[in-house]
Figure 1: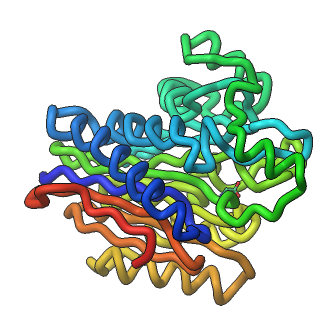
Figure 2: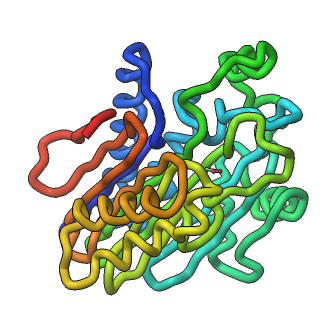
Length: 290
Ligand code: GLY
């Protein structure tokens, strides 16, 4: 199987001054995941590696630089799913630098979704990189929160889908949720079928956008279902977004890889940062608009 990887940096509005940072961040994430895939690593390892890069980049609403909740805190959700239907997720956690790595650890055991203090305790126990919760607050986010500025580029998730050389798919997501969300709110990101889905027999999907709109249309599973009959992932992704638009209000996007390694993506926001790599490309392709 030809390895393939795609990441998104969120369905959002990307102002001209942020285009380069979004492209650079998504490119670096794909490069990290691609290095794993071409050295024989698994799809889940590649998704974790790529997502960690996005979590460390304050350009994106995940990890360091995530949007702040009603109490001015970074509160994070993340999930990962393998095409064998194994999955792990954490939600409403603080002081964890790379929630995606904790979500991957949870995949090994039960329970598979841990929230708040339970998720933080598990992170400590599994040796995850912990920090003071304030250490994840980026200056720009703090200023915007303090001054009650309108935030146009944060209500989103970052994510990744990868297919490895043995034909295994994985999908991941990570987010700080929505700006000034009520403490304890959890959106789609940590919820299998909504924020992400992977099935080795069909494909993998990671979504982004308004959790309250994504959850009722089960967006990731809806997109995967549209892959049936060998439909191209680009068409399936568009059909999933059209379904969301026809049923609820809200902005969303999704990225897909099918079991053959074909990629696709769609969104109804004005932009979506996105990058991908597969065999035959001499460098990562990155976009902020399709
Ligand atoms: N998609 C991120 C959220 O709604 O929490």
